[in-house]
Length: 75
Image (cartoon, rainbow, N blue to C red):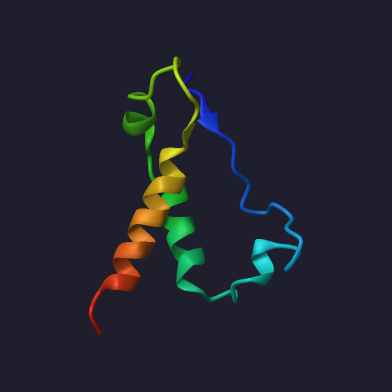
């Protein structure tokens, strides 16, 4: 199993106390997270090595990439 840097979308922060409080329920970012979480990323994760530094999980990186792409589209 590859080593990934752990992340938690429900991590508590100083202000505001939760990421859930940052975004409204109908925010685009929440939708993208739901879609990416349903994808089979096993071909991506299997390519990561067990040696070396821990990496961010491909689901997190793909979510950021897709969200950035969508918000960068011209109106």
